[in-house]
Length: 507
Image (cartoon, rainbow, N blue to C red; front, side, top):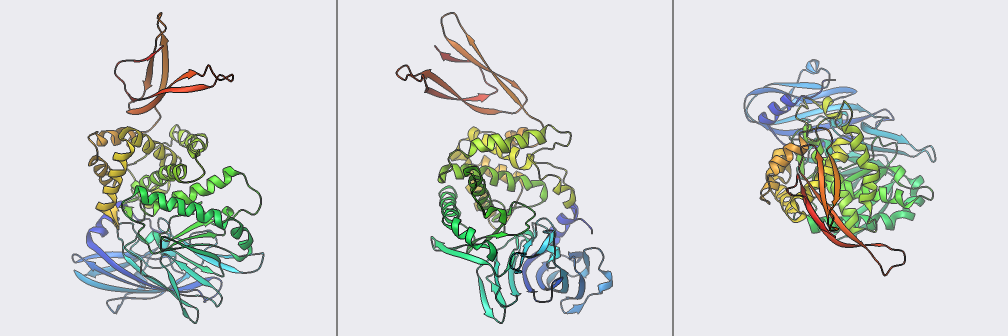
């Protein structure tokens, strides 16, 4: 199969304006295949050739503006659209597609406990082509209209609220403009628990054999969801941009979770079958907070190309930990980050395979997959936490909200992100980004305290590295009234590194 290069994506983005996908899926065709019929409405800005992507079991028919295309020209995963004239077009693609057993595309699972079957999509990066024909790149956003035919007794979940039309047919509400990799479908005899918050439908879903365990934790799951939702609305001027919020715990998921707008999918190991530690519950809550952050950063505003994947993941990682600390009972999540996640980033950053948080040489989709590591998640989140300390949270959030307003339901780059932050501060955010995001390796800060004869002490921080840092220094006294001799904070100092004169600490 051909991978998509950045040059190809940029050329196609200049040529096409994609308006709407009308997708009809028939999930009643057997255990191995399903039927996919897609109509794509788009505009070509000039006369040119291009292509649409698909990975079918069988390509049955393709019509461009009502005229049959030569199916023999289909090669790999590309159907050429040659001699395309400037103007409006309609492409129809009819195909059968294979179910997946490894998590890519439309995954099919039969529960050995009760024999029930469940289907769900995982379309990240380039796997939408395993479900329907698409101009498959993140900066060709469109509206998606979806209908699904499913077996009797099943329910269908999607990015928008779904309606059962009868005779096994389901229709999902039209999406806003979203990227192809964010389209989501989950079908099966789901066990569902529903509620409403601030007028928005909330739902949690799992396979029927796990129903008692989901019911046990439903209150906790909804509480975490509500708390994070409310806190994000305090931080972000842009309201939640979709019509519902469903969280489906799905079997054999090949990732931790996926931020599909309106339908987040999680591995169903998060539906706990036995007693677990509070740390495990905190981890699950962190994933909920992380995926919800993506509704704004990733779904509302989406990267233009995969070199900015860190913007999605680092932002959600930082915001998830911070919001969980602020809004829920899990108030020490940054300790967990420092112990577990940050070490992952340090390790990755000191290997020969290290790369910048924001790499510049992501030439194709295959290369992009190499950057899903501790740098894109943990180091990037650490850098953003340092950025918040350096800018101040007020200016950081002002810049974030400017970013959402400028690029809502569109795409943005690192340069756009930095420009939005720069609009809210007098600090040189562009220089900060060059130092922190375009470089590799770690800095080392070493505190040195020297004592003078008169009892005063001076702190100097030795800095091995080139990046600017902002750190907090706490001055403590022994509590003489406490027999345990606990330390009591006297003063907190915020210092910029590199620093000027050594800082006197007093006696």
